[in-house]
Image 1 (tube, one colour):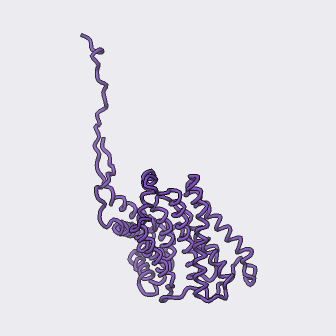
Image 2 (image 1 turned 135 degrees about the vertical axis):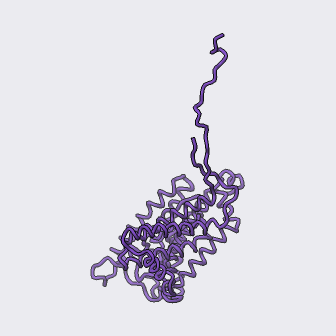
Image 3 (image 1 turned 45 degrees about the vertical axis):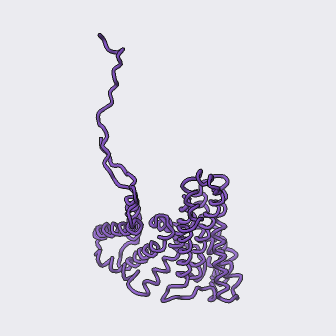
Length: 367
């Protein structure tokens, strides 16, 4: 009887990370051709429109980069936790918590100088996201509660808290009884780099670079990998697993909160219930495509942001928004499959199909 099995390669294939994403992108585009043809659309025209809307001009690039900021930071939040083998599924709520922290500072310090106000807003955003991640971190470190469940459940808590604020204390008195928060002051807006791109693009790139270096080239990053892969070895080496879990999950939440602060200050006029826009969950996909490496998050976020922007643009041509979602899913599955094959190879395992027969004992034989 023969079967296909995965066998770990002695050495990981070079270029596994970018190659995995490239293969996933090609698989998605090829399958997308049949998908578009089946729905009565011209694939070449659709793909041309997607490229023009996402990368075809400086204005298109500015929109794509703005979209890549929350995707990249959410992906970084997941990847930071993933570097120790932990899963932060609460980036969506942590983004909202960060936006709430930034919005509170904007309400309190509306008359502050722009630089001081924006810095305080982003600092409060980091604190807001970190606070939401603190409970799951403590529960995981000291009680052993699965962080996937706790971080996921707190997403709903953050959304409900924001709804309560918008319908109550933060409701704009001039909103004509609509549940809208007050508008942000002009000095609470991030400056523009070019076209529609804002300074948050640079801030996000710096944060991703810092964590990328820290995870790959510092003792802190090495200890995280050891603690995540071999807990007993880490304890023997004097590494506190509880402290590392607390640190990683709180940092992860702070990074996601930072994304909420930038999204509020860079792309929004006021805080809304839909500010996160699913970026926290999309960050899981970004981190998976980057193979849980902070160093690969930025490139994946830009390309994934381009796919999202391009997917939205083709709706003007009559293409359903579900097509864009399917293309994103195909990229994910293709890239993950390519990432697995960069570490493992498929071999044919031929097992003996002969049934086992009991051996005869000497006592069973007759003379």
